[in-house]
Image (cartoon, rainbow, N blue to C red; front, top):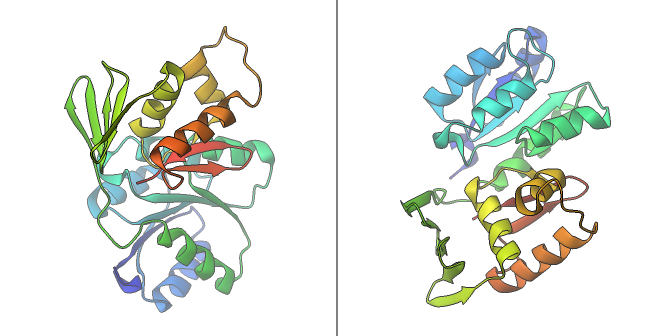
Length: 233
């Protein structure tokens, strides 16, 4: 896919910001759509399936956090990159954005060259080929690319190789694969895999991630430092 085939949706309630960003991205050959709030963004995104969505956080009617959460529920947008563009630089705002399913965070004001550079870097994550969908074969079997997960037998198959994983490794992998591209925070992982009443050490997740990478390869599970992990094909 060449750069001028990429579709970018910009969402901000400030028209001058939309005009500024649109001008600079269209000049680089991107197809640009705009929306003034989260509700408009959902309608346009579902219709146009953009490769990248850049969301402001503070907007009327539906803010960026709520919009991001809703966008992540749309199957056709599972491979869409979502980044927040906002003047709010507080840590809690960034964490809320990542917990909602965002992939990156850009603080404004931003210089045109910096914006274009960040957009190019984000779109590289989409790859050159069509994203591989998650396929639910039956209630106990899920496939994504060349990875098959058999929930009944705690078994995974990569190509022709089969292996049975320890229970917690298996549950962790199943969680990450359930929403490819979504960033799962450490808190979400602890709660989903170990439960709220179980106390584990800070390095427990890291150890399990390392073991999974040894078995399925290093390229599938990405770390977002200080936030959590996500599965990519």
